[in-house]
Amino acid sequence: MRIGEMVRRTGVSERLLRYYEEQGLLAPERLPSGYRVYEEKDVETVRHVRTLLAAGLTTDTIARVLPCVRDEGERLVPVCPELVAGLRQERERISRAIDDLQASRGLLDAVIAAAPQPVAAGSR
Image (tube, rainbow, N blue to C red; front, side):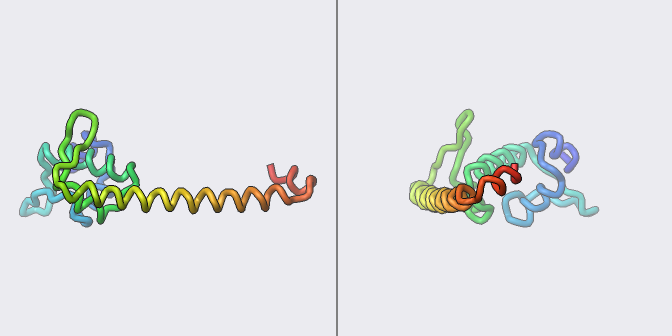
């Protein structure tokens, strides 16, 4: 299928499909004219990429993860033993980022709470 059909089937823009290709996440066939031709498996790959991005993984990590997951209904299942340890490390990275953001929000809340009432009321 051509890129327009791929966009329609996945809901992902042409620009994003090209980005996934640059990142090594997709490898469509190229016609002599330069047009990209996608296969049915590429639709599934894009769905996997979207799921893993939503889970907080970087495209570098996703490139390493993709060959080691399979689709099982509505979820991705790791099939390489070493993958689970790497995913646990990613989960820890995300947890640390959440902790840092919560600490930042707490500090910002303290600054906002310290504002005099007329200043605080005017910022709504």
